[in-house]
Image (cartoon, rainbow, N blue to C red; front, side):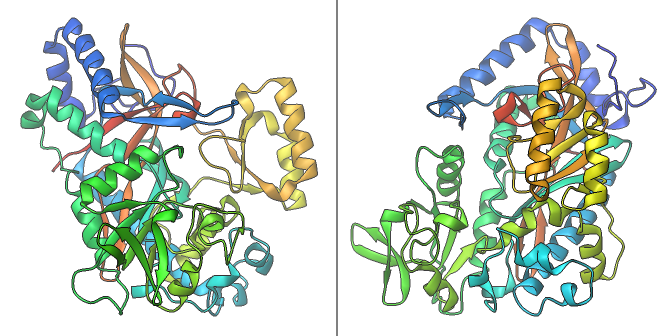
Length: 474
């Protein structure tokens, strides 16, 4: 195996096999590499037959690609996961409380913990949500918290995804693929299950139904359509939950309710799991050019006759400048110190921070505050002089559009390569479900892996792949 340049989750800091990987390593050593290569090809064929693809934007036309999958699992001990879960739940509860506060009394602003302009001038802040209380008081029904590991038990939050987090379908398909190909591994290792996620998702969404709901809540998934990069996931989750997948043109407002077209006429919906951004949700309230949303849906929502998951306006919690205040947010709303720490962050809107970033650009990672998918970011240590010069111009022109962070020594997990096992950098996106009475965290989540040697960019849109993530029962 190649020697990792940073902490390796399988081999540890001293090249000593870590406990969670012992049974897996014994199995791997007994396997014929030719059989494993054949299994890798089978997995790729299975993914292609299933249609597990995503769209890459940036060229003249969106390009559809297969999600690269690596068969070496990432393995986390039960005790390590227990601590992570406590930190994730604490953070998600704080985010939900923060969202309620900023759309009501803004106590955190009055207390001087967050500058008022960070809210009022934020493009993700929706004035239309001021004074609106979502059914059950839940803003963030589905959350993805991106974590990076830098050492044994050392996890940092890289970013929060509270708007429309994606990737859960890949988590489920990765597990299903591993179960099909290597059932013996799961009989040897006590791996916590993730297969209940669709059932849990539907139950959690139904628990957030509005007071006007009578009987069993009607749930539907709203998709922008087949050309969206995550369309596979939208269709997958609707199918797995046993609910309708709808587009904007399938819906209309009927008698103060949002209803979907069926062969028997229009049927009212109680809970809409939307995968359409705020701007396109309602042409009467937001972008008048939108053909993806439903005219008048926000009026129905504000009247309390519909649950929209996640609630409109939650995107402000995805903002990377707001992220930099998360330690204060957690402490303000929970009265506790954060269990999970942030990565050190410089807000380029602040002159002193901007000067530091300009002077140290080649050592930093710079991100757009509303960026996602690995687009629009700079990784200083691997950037060319031309890239650095271009980013300096961007920072001078719009400093408030960027934050900067140190280049972390992300942990590595082995991938299966021609050389055997080769270390590659990873991150982790656990998925969280929130309902009025509970917070559920699926054990594990989506591990994204940078397949290029030395790369720190794990996004599939930038050439990254995925792995199955195991959380063991202690």
